[in-house]
Image 1 (cartoon, one colour):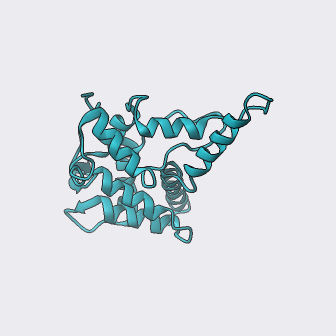
Image 2 (image 1 turned 135 degrees about the vertical axis):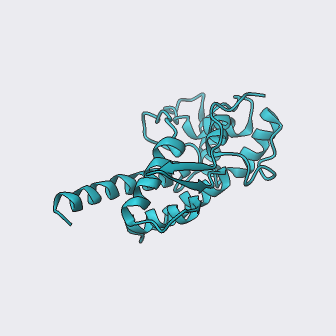
Image 3 (image 1 turned 90 degrees about the vertical axis):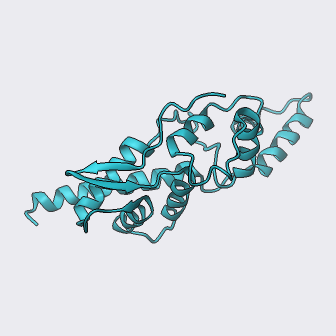
Length: 202
């Protein structure tokens, strides 16, 4: 079994105060799913993230404190450096693909993701996901999604038809990566707004 490269954390320090956090993979996924609501403001997204990820606060926090705490969590414990494909397409949606991920984790690691809810940390989960072997169902599906349709010849008609059917079957809409990017963009916008408020003397 491969070893995760970073241990899960259950607390962070901010301005001398300790905040208990829940970074179990399933909780982080629920938080990202909430970020996909299109009518939310950046402030709404920060509030949702704080409420879902911070489970114990030693004091009432200001809006700026809330941002700073979520920024620490995002930048140091959630953001995973993943190389993006050249064509910008997304090949994985953790929520939609959970059934394939489940079987793949059992096959490669002997890990039952359902039993690990509330226990397996986000960085641990992501390190294992990125390390899945090419023999797993999840990697097979990602390969189908990433394969470009070749130019048709008199010899590959059946292959193209089979590939297009498979890509249609496994097609994605809004992916987990896009939800995470939406949240990251909100963090970025929020800090810019806060800096603007400080510069304007408010």
